[in-house]
Length: 156
Image 1 (cartoon, rainbow, N blue to C red):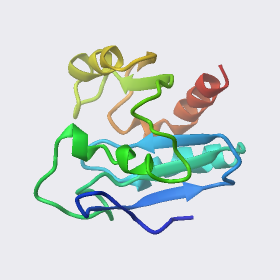
Image 2 (image 1 turned 45 degrees about the vertical axis):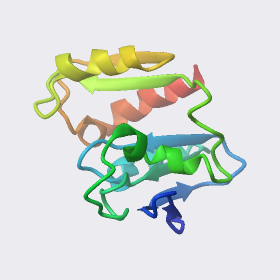
Image 3 (image 1 turned 30 degrees about the vertical axis):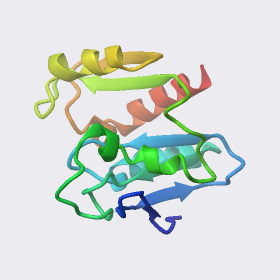
């Protein structure tokens, strides 16, 4: 079920979905430009049906979050920062969690060589999983494979 938006310190409202029992292990999904929380629905439904709590947000300037002409830098842009002030996430900037970077090497929108390995290198405790021949929208077009791999990663 969707919740009332969170309002950031600079007055921007961040829309989010929070599905499942608060007592369940949470999984937070963060989208890229120019998508929204809705792009994670195939994963959210899958993990909700596997007993997890799933959370996804529309980044500032995307989807149902406030549309703004400024603050499009990583300190502002990362909608997760707003969640540190809520009851469902600790201060995420202070903890290091295992992350899985998944990227198709046939991505014609965000070229693999310029982003996948670099993203994994820049994150603490990140694992890179490369998908041979998968396109940019692989979370939708290849949802069964992506969901199975995510579940295996979370259980590992």
